[in-house]
Length: 308
Image (cartoon, rainbow, N blue to C red; front, side, top):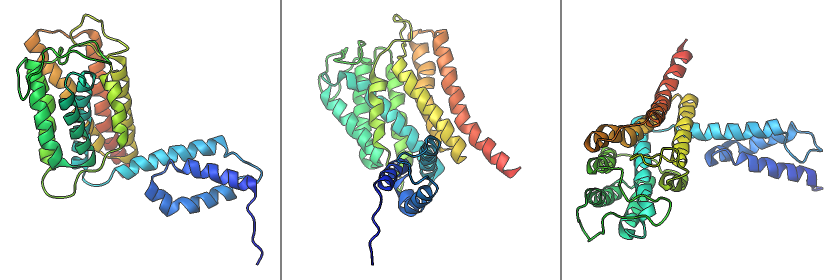
């Protein structure tokens, strides 16, 4: 038997197609990757070394769509709650990161609690979150708990504001308390929560950074463009995911995050401190609420259309 040697042109094209197929989740590639590659190679001109741009874009878009659909599995309410708990836990850690040099132990414990949440280790995450939460509430109120901490706590990087300078103890309590409540709801025996992506760690610098400034500097509740951009991008992605999957888990996650980070500040901090919201605050809050509503309404609209 004479072996048939693969041409260099074909091998280059095949390697590039395989790189594009990495957009699809591993289980899909294992089940359909070779078949899809054969179809792509047969339908492409033999003298090409680069996939057609439209085909390449279609593969990437299809891979992302398949990944999103692949995530929409299991219990909707458990996964949606875990998604919201993850987002708030990451935001709580981001609030401490600029002050890591002053409170290294509590920042490290917060990072461990986020790791436990991401991996679905509920019973590990609960005591860690409680411990860090108690210390965070104490710092926000100027009290001493567990160890002597100089208050106010000043940052070493990313921001120029003292820790919790724009938060009341009740607001910090809500931020950590609802994470604990969410974890307790996920704790009963059964399937552990989904293991979350390591990409959640990449969100921390954007949430922790105090710039570039968008709000007027003297306002007690500034919002940085880095945080705004991340929150809007993730909520828009959640709305798209809800549209693609006809699933409400993304809406539950967004609603949990919005309740803790926006509603908690508006209803609890402002009346206590006598702070007024600017038109920029109101516009941004309304935009987040609109995106959260979209994550809930788009799946319902899709389902109704499918029955027509």
